Image (cartoon, rainbow, N blue to C red):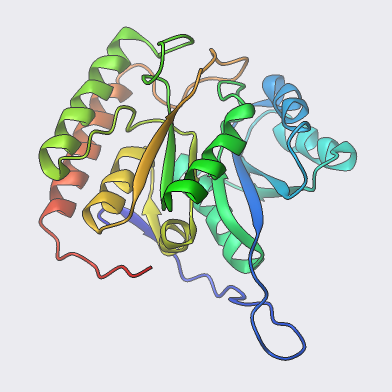
Length: 268
């Protein structure tokens, strides 16, 4: 993948039974990147408490300047589901924060699926079980929660951003023929073939379209389910003012460079 973080993380790659055979991975890790999300984080975690056993939560504090880290630590003490907190000392951006979650999953070798979930309250918790079920049922390597499937209810981003989303839909469809409807969605469930690759290298910022294109181009199975998004409940978006233009140019260049690279061999 082009423009990606290259990780040299020496993680523990396996947990074995006493007879030396690997233990099956059945866990589901929900990675929640959080930058200055003290206002919304508690409500987001509360909404996740209704998930069934087998899900674990990981809050990645991305160098927040507010009380996000303190709030996360307090939530870890009261959460019904296992809740882990990792804190980055610097604001590295969404790509590094999410990749930290993939590295955590690789180090703690008990997770089958890794799910990205926003801290700002935009994503519906009930979609998480549906994402996992879709991956199981369709043998998907990556399943995306799309706000543009279904009846169109819910928050569908601003008009300017919808123009950018439409551009990436057409670009990815032109290069891969895949009918993806929401390439910028941050609500995604990744199976082992996807997230283990993402743990090694992942886009540094604005990672969703680029990593999606990488999956499609290298033969991974990608699908979508309809979800109803909400407006953010706090914090500030990482894409504002001049950034949408920079975002489109950077991601487009990265996708075009990736499109001419030699394909990697991916096996089931």
